[in-house]
Image (tube, rainbow, N blue to C red; front, side, top):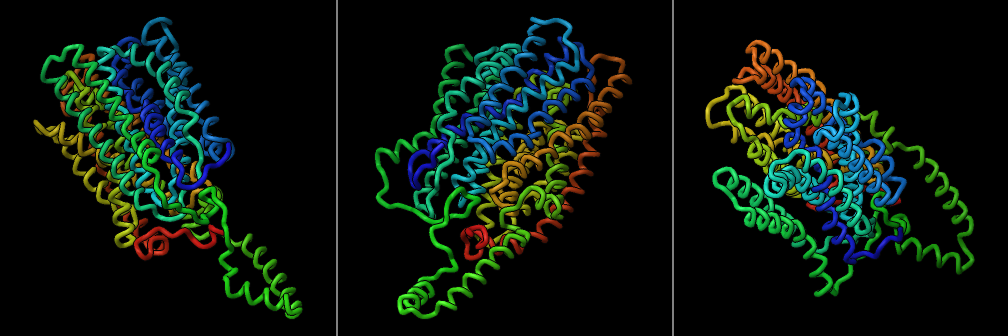
Length: 558
């Protein structure tokens, strides 16, 4: 696929298309919307259901293959695999929940859910890697925007589920089976690599701000309509009107390329950028004008031929030496080079403990609400989704502000939010009346920040060349955390308490209290590791953001 010239519209068209693909790629966050149907129709225990939740997270976050594919194939190939995974995976689950096929084996459901949610990894990797490379000077902002829309996806699907599908789990699964492929196939052409502008374009800040504001309006609108649905009866006409407004807000980022078409900028921004940005270097930094002019004069005078031979020999030797030198943090790493670094594993464990504990609550959110006396848990999911969006968007925006202000590592924000997560889990465990909604919103924000910080941090420490593979390996912390904390801990504790009560549903704070205490301890460890990581990588950020603007490492441009 041909690359496009700097400053052209397609990078922004691609970002607008990526918004819709990212919403589609957030399908895994809608597990609480149909988990109750899975449990009742198939007669599953809570532990069996949480193991399906592990399958949900495992599929969503195992992105090693998408990461490798994103370096070898164009985005449309990666997107196509995601489309097929969604169609076949959710198709099987729909057959089971709609009872079109009776007595479907549990292991078939588990595999189908892995395949279905693995579409998230393929779709998300394609658009994230492409747009991070298209906007290499605004990595935190781009990551925050795109992952923010993923965080909103659960609220978007909740809106469709309640307003259009009238709370039908089988209809929602059919929508995932057919709707996600249709959306992605329609937008596939616009997600493509482009050559970005070489300098900071003054209009770029305004364009990103517009996109952030549009996403914030969408988030507030979704939360408001969800609350209205709970407190009043909404007619079908009003429901469909809400959905139309939601679609308009999702289309809003397209206004940027439309504006650029109608009012094109007269200024061109071109620059040599590193290989990690998929660009070519125009001038070798070693060949300064003065030295090249001097050497040319000597050659014209017939002098200095021996000097040229020496320079060539030295240059050849320098190239060989450079190939042998291992990359420094901030430069482009291969996966093998990155995986032996202490910072790599510190970042992995910080992410694993923070996100792994948060996803445990998300997977059990419906049951947590029911155990505490809330029959309709869609509001809880919308609150978590709204907080998740704010955390992802804010994690990128706020961390971008501080790295440019004083080269403060993004991971300082991870430390702060994980301390808040500790307090949130203790609030859940206390089960004080009136705190469930607040705790859920807070946890959603902190959970989202983990994504908004981890992704740009990966690119800054280990480069963009193998970014897709490296950040997807980091993402394995999510399903592993879900397996340990949700499948083995939360499900076991819930079923044990349910057996004590002798009923079919566990009721009361004891259903998850022990789980919340363990999660609080897990986040304490994560916060300490985050402090260590922040101290270690501070010099890297001083190098990259000296003077308040992002600078690619010199070696990356050779």
